[in-house]
Length: 387
Image (cartoon, rainbow, N blue to C red; front, side, top):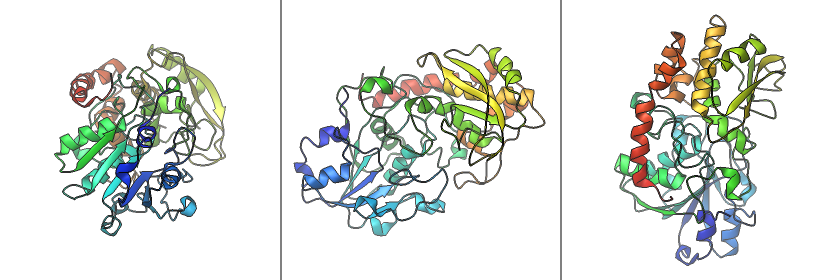
């Protein structure tokens, strides 16, 4: 069984005595006994001055892109790092002045646009040049540490879903991402990573022996995390990504989709590790709430062979080819950005959307990021903490 960075830290907390500590955490910050980190540390005589919570709140009570308010449930002052403006994504100066140690302990899901790792990156920027230590308590990448998939983001498309200069599926733990980002940005910060015991890069989450604690309202299980690098792209389309149902991201739909027709198109791509089942469903909230939608359900046969980002692009391409007059790329404000469409922010540029609208072959579209994948796979090895 894997022992997390928190597990290792709790073996000896003497270095935390008499420190002014802030914790960046949510409900995934648990020890082996399912105790929250702030509670366990308190029992060991370690006082937490303040908790900074990410998007969705300390207990993942809020939906996506919803400002988070007061959260008194922990018994510790809790400050949201996700409010109603881009400025709230950074800690206010008044919340840092009395802190000399920040600890980060949140379960990430291995995708660039899942915002928790971006919260870490932005907090590191806020500590640049300060006499404040930051400790990252490492946890597994649920998607493993080997596969890299998708294009590197264009810096011109930097947003809260693209702070980190990594592909959509990056194959790094949060600790490794922190080391990489410090080097990339040349940050002057006192960074320590408390690594794990028992984790290897070949492991997918079910192999860790750790319980899955829901990190956000629409991430109910590991299989959802597995499809997320591709299915999150649907946040940028006028197609339901399954929010408002019990299996978000594992299925999608829209009023204009004829499921059997779309399944036949997807079969022509010959994608590995995944099959598609025609479905109809009715979301209780979010896009098309209360309407019956046609769509497809993703069944993952081989998680090691499955390429989630490629699958997401293939689905978007198939939708455009089958329904060119109905499919839309949404252009409203997305994660505080009103400059680029959401689909482009997620992909990291407008290249993929442009290729899809031209009905370019999937093989040609995917070839556009193969060089990025190879280059990043080489770069990231410098920051690997595990074999």
